[in-house]
Image 1 (cartoon, each protein chain N blue to C red):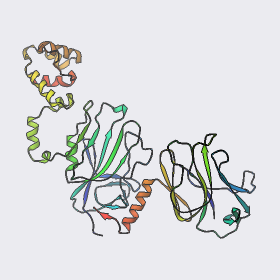
Image 2: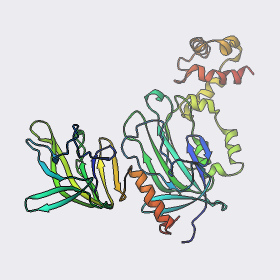
Image 3: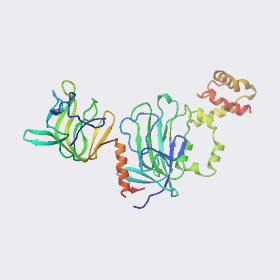
Image 4: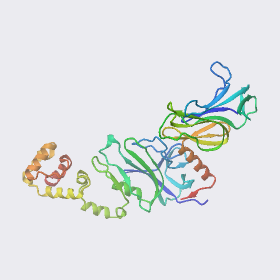
Length: 245
Length: 172
């Protein structure tokens, strides 16, 4: 039987990509952080390799189950353990992480939780080189930011494109403060630009708490909806950076 | 042959053929008596460390004696266990098992709530079957000398590894 394509192995969880896939007792273990694993969650993959991490592998399918074989060949694709999750009640303000798999990605196996608070579905996929980093770079893991389902964006891999996008981009802290709503972030930036800078109180902007900052900026702007729903503490640093530095 | 007791979610244990007083058991029973239930009784006669099953016109008898040990065994398999409304109370995907007596275990006084089987079976080497407990399944496999229990994922992993080691399967 001729050998298959060599894959470099990665574990992807949110915005984290770790090299290698953990092996325990001859399997890729399913150890979710939320949800329950009662019942039969599904076999991700088996291997004859000892406990540790697999970094370069070839993949065989036997009776619909995956077998990973360690190898030394130059990798041509990526084997990615995608740990999709939805946080439990105790972490409800943190975003969920999901991935939309395009046709270039081959889904090989998966395991899921059943019941409990939150849940996780882990999927092993064969993907083009650079896929895992592309997905991870798009996920924003900030409290109160909405859950995201990420798709592969080839334009992120174009040299120079990322720097060009960053120059035109809205500051990331504003995107996060407005829950990903770039339109609102731009409206806020326009409002900040129109503030009468000579009436800004530097002490209030840099040292006071949420209520005083809110009252001061709404007063000098004459706009009771100055913050457009954002938390004043999250956006006041932008006001300071625009007018006081 | 040795005789084992197997229940959902538990490790197989060899059945002691004496009671607490050290007296030899007179019979093995499967199932329960009562409404919606069914009990089977298999007499146990003779003396010795090994058991063989004998088919008569009136039913099966277990005969104790110093028979040569063999790779088969006897097993009392309780597929029912604790009550769960949605579970299936039977022996699943059995291979190389011959049932020689069966009974039924039920829940509730009327026996109308779910019921399941308890059987006495002769088990050949490499026989296997699956039992469900409240939340998951367990595979049981008799190697000829011992019982091996595996979760479905462990069994799938073992079979897949053996296939690839034999040169079968398909490379990606």
